[in-house]
Length: 364
Image (cartoon, rainbow, N blue to C red; front, side, top):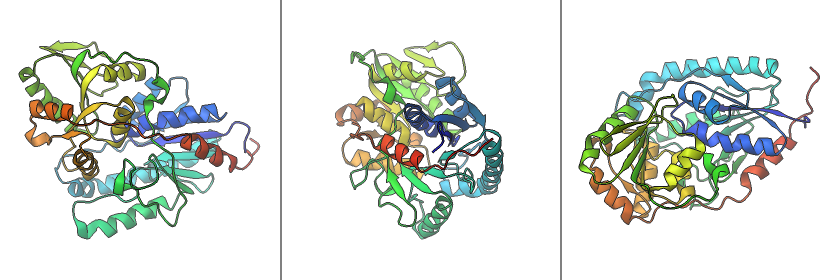
C-alpha cells in the first residue's frame, strides 16, 4: 500500500445527498492516514468545497439532471443520451486525473463513468436493485445497472446487511457476481455529534434538495401553505450560495446551512420536512427526528422508501401534488420517528481492508 494513498471520491451531482454522504468517507480516510480528494460538479461541488475547504477538489462534468416530467422513465429516456455522454466524458477525464494527480484508488458515489483499469475502484450505492414503475422493464433495469457495477472491483452499500436495513429491497440481497459490502449508515453529521440542547426553537424545519425544477416547486408549495400554520418555521433552500436570511411572516428563509449549523437547526425543530432521499433519511435518523416526507414526483426510489417507512409508522408522507401541510405535520408528530441503526465500525473496517489491497505507489 502507498505510504499515504490518494483516494479520489467522485460524487454524483444529483441533489446534495451523494456529496453529503461522501463526507464521512473522506473523514474516515483521513483518520486511516490516506489523502482523500473530492470531485463533483454544480451545487454538489460547491457543497463539498464549503464543507471541506481544506481538501483538494477536482471538477467533473455536470449531469444537470432535470425532472420535467412526472414519469421517471420519461425523464431518463429523454436525458439518456446526455447522461451517457457525460459518463463518457467523466471516464476520460478520470484517466487524466489518475495520471496528473497520482490517484491510487477511486470511490465513485453513483458516477458510472468513474471507473478505470489503472487503479482499483469502488462503487458506492444504495440501489443494487433499482425500482422502476413498469414491472416489465424491471429485468432490463437490473441488468443495465449491474452491467455498470461490474466495471468496479467492489460495491459498497451504505446500509446494514439483512432484511431490516433502511434501503429494503433496493439493496437486499447483495449482488452475486461482484464483492458487495455493507458499510453502515453514512451521515454528514457523524462528526457533529456534540451535545445539543433538545429544546424546540421552531415548529418545523424544511430542508430542500434535489434536481430542478422540482426543488423550486416544493419550495413554492411550502411557502404557499406556511401562512396557514401557527408557530415559527425555518426553510433551508439547499442552495450553497451566500445570501442573508430573509423573513416572510413566521418563516425564516435561509439559502444554505453548513454542517454544524444545520445539525443544530435539525435538533431544535419539532418536525423536519423534506424529500425522502436516502442520505437525508440517514441524517434525520441520526438526529432521531419526527419527519414529514414529500417524495419527488415520479422518483420511484423516494416513493418506495417513503411508503415503506410510513407503513411501519415511522414517518408521515404527503404527495407534492396534493400537499396538506397541516395534516402532514400532525401525522409526523404522531409517528414514532426515525432512529439510526448502530453501524459499528463497518465503514472504517472496509476502508482499512480496501486500502491494504492497494499496490505500492509507482515512482513519479
